Structures are given as structure tokens and as C-alpha cells.
Image (cartoon, rainbow, N blue to C red; front, side, top):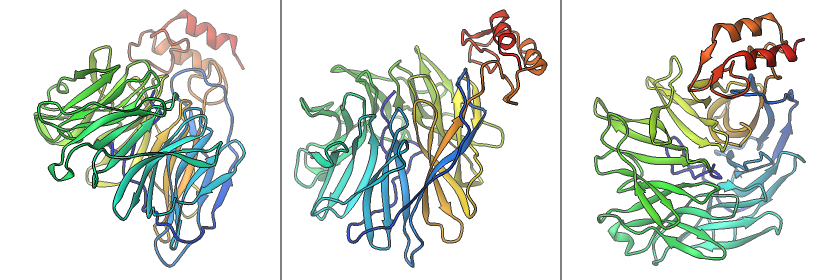
Amino acid sequence: MRQRAGKSRHQRSWPTYFSACCRAAVVATCLPWSTAIASTGLPCRYEIAHVIEVPPCIVPNGVSGTGISPNGRYVCGGLSHCDDGFVFVFDTHSGVLTEIPLPAGVTQAYPVDITDTGLMVGEIVGPDSWNGFVYDLSLGAFTATLEPAVRGGRCHVAGINRDGVVCGTRSVINPLEFLRTAYIWSANDGFTDVGFIDGCSTFGNDISDSGVMVGSMCSQSPDHDSVRGLVFDNGTITILDVVPDGFSSTAYEVNASGIIITGGMLQEDPLVTHTFVLESGKSTLLTIPPRMDRCGAVNVTNGGLIGGNCLILAMPEPRHPFIWKGDQFLAVSPNLPPGMRMDRANDMSDDGTMVLQLARIQDGNGIGAIARPAWPEPGDVNCDETVNVNDILDVIRTWGPCPSGCATDLDENYVTNVGDLMIVLSNWG
């Protein structure tokens, strides 16, 4: 996968503004959730495991969880209470929330992503600076500042992979010319800039654990026929074709297997971005669930799970979180604590754990939540917590090839057959 990319990308929004001043009082609540052994396909349901919130205030405040490590242990984000502002890391194993004061001279912070080892990346803003940062949780310190190549420019951060390689976009010439370049950065090698293509800016949106960065040229939004997705792999640039039946493309997410989440405008629907899954050279429209009009991804894991949000055009807020595997999908709709409503999903770990943005109904202030998937036991095709004749009937009913994956393909060989039937029988009860 990636680690996860930043908030400037498709179907993501920048976290709440956090200013530095005083100190925040934060409540991190751990809620019980049912554990299950993953078998295949999608989880049965989601349950809220942790809630992170701040007390109400007379001015807008709240918590925004923006990234989760691939192993699901660490969640990063920002919090504010009245005039308080902090970056935070929440350890889901211990339940400890670490508040990190902003560096001197910094007035705003945008945490973006975090690794399994606790390396957090994001952006910090001062009166006349806009830089990226790396924070090492084990050291309790900001360890690197990523700067634009020119004074007055900006350095945006999109994500970090397991090897600590960061990707993003930065200014390298006079910022008044509005030309920027995608980059990768590491502590050992510094910046590697992609540069301009045909006089156009390039943008870095995500980086996989195999070191492949994806992004776009000319714009981050595929709203013009000059915009194309790009892949940067070991110094080689590949320009992606337009999406099927479309006139543009951009690349948002990538995993270590080379699955890329792309988006583009269609000839017949040129006002809205459509999301596709590009795998082995084949581009497939991301399945849109019933009642939903548009969907976008926030991550694709190394195992091929896709997490994201869908919306109804007539009522674009709130977003509705979903998880996909092949052409299957599941609405992420856990029971929420009283007085809270769903806003969107911000990120997803490798096992499907989601960072959700909630809001307090009374005042609309942001609340962070971590939702865990409850996976079916082996052989429990219909998620009723019992392996019985109904699971056998489901296997028989879907007998045969399922090239896009199906719930009855228990051994994940893209066909429902006697092997899957034997899994049901061997787990009876």
C-alpha cells in the first residue's frame, strides 16, 4: 500500500484548523468490540473501539483523526480546545493519547500520516512559511523539516511509506508562477524532484511500500483534458491514459502490488470525478452502492481492501463510509455513541480499521473515532455467527467463477467450488 496519503487528495478534506496557544483537555474513550478471525472478503460489520473528543467550548473546537498506521496501532491528527492547538498520536493498544505542542513560530499544523514505528508526517505553517515535518514518536521530537526550494513557496506532504520515504508536492521556482513539482524525500537521500512535464506542474499524492509514487500532472483535480495521472518508479515517469470513456485522469492511491486508485471526468458526465481501480493494466469503475451517486477512496491496502466515502448528490454532506473488496462492498455504519453523527472516513489500516470523523450533534464540533471490523469466522458466509446449512446454500447458489471476488470464495481463488464447501463443512457449528 502506501502509508496513507494526504488530505489534499481526492475525496479527502483538510483537517480542522489547529492554532497554538494554551493546553487542551482531551478525553479518549475505549469501547468494547467483538473480535473475530478474518477469513476472506469483507468484514461482517464495524464497531466503535475508541472515541477521542474535547470538552465543549464557546468557540468551535474539536478533534480530527487524519491518519492510521498500516498495523492499526497509531492514529495521528490534530485537536483544538478554545484557543488550544496540538498535534496528537493515539496508541490504540495502550489507549494513551500523546499531545504534541507545535514548534516555536508555528501557528497551524496539518498531520497527515503515520507509520507502524511512529513516524508522523504532515505540514506546519508559520507567518511566512509552509513546510512539511517529520515527528518521531519514539524520540518525542520533530526530526526533520521539509522545505520548498524557494523562499515564499510551500512544501505539501501527502504520505510516508514503511521505509520512511515521504512524498508530496513543493515549490521549486518563483511561487508567483504557480509551478510546483512532485517529490520523494528520505532522511538519507533528501529530495528527489519529479520536475515539470510539458510545462505543467506535477503533484505527488501517495507512495507505496515498494517506493512507487503516484500523482498527476497539470492539476490535482482531473477537471481539464490536459490532466493525466502519473507513476514515478525508481526515477522513471509513466503517464497514465485517460479513464475509460473519459478525457482526463489522476492517480490518488497505490499499494505495494501496484493497484492504483484513479479518477477522471467522463465524456458523458464532465462535471463530476469518477473513481476507478487500475490493476494489471485494466481500469474498472469502483462499484457505487445503491442510493449513492459518487464514491472516492482514502486508501487501498496491500491486501486489496479499498476504504472510502460515498455521497448522495442531492445531500453531499455527510459522506458515507464504505469498504470494498473486488466488486463487493460494505457500508461502515457502526452504532455511534449518543449525541454524535457520522461525517466521513479519513483513513484505513491494512486490517480494515477505519479512522472516522464524527461530529457532536449539539454544536457540530469534531470528534475522532476508530472503528474496528468484526470479521466472520471461517465458513460463516452470511455473518450470522453460526456455520450451518444456510452457509452451504449460499455456496451452492453462487457456485462457479467469481473473478471480482465474492463472499463465498472462502479460499480466495476466484471461484466458488468444492474447496469452499469443504471449508464450511469443516467449521460446522
